[in-house]
Length: 157
Image 1 (cartoon, rainbow, N blue to C red):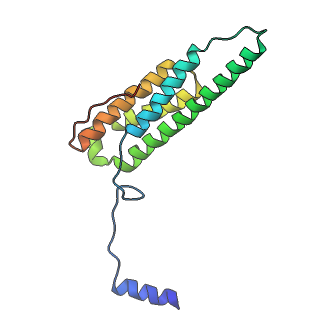
Image 2 (spheres, one colour; image 1 turned 90 degrees about the vertical axis):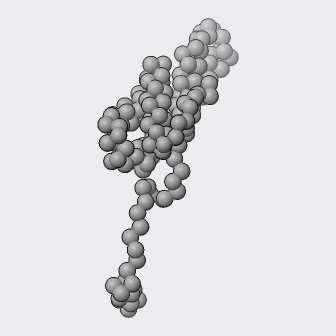
């Protein structure tokens, strides 16, 4: 009964269509969150590569080394996942066909950036971490250009 009444009301007084560029029309986007996470990936990668293996007979140092290695790796993995998530949200929710017309390589840049996030998780590679930062800088520039603003790219580290 209630369904029929609601359908009748909807036919007489249909709700206007709402359009939003994302799941929730907050309008708040910024590639800075991806940059911060990617910087953490780069930092942890550098720290991991700089770790010195202790002498095999120094059990306390060996345990400390493995604990530190595990912690740095966990942070690197988590931050690579965060960077990838932030990039995917920006790519799929903010950027529209008009942005692609102005930046024909937009999809390639995002695809490469998200692939670098995956590589940063799978490997311990300074090159992949630096590549990720380079892609994010390009995304930063395209993003702010799409808003008609010039925002200086900077890194915290």
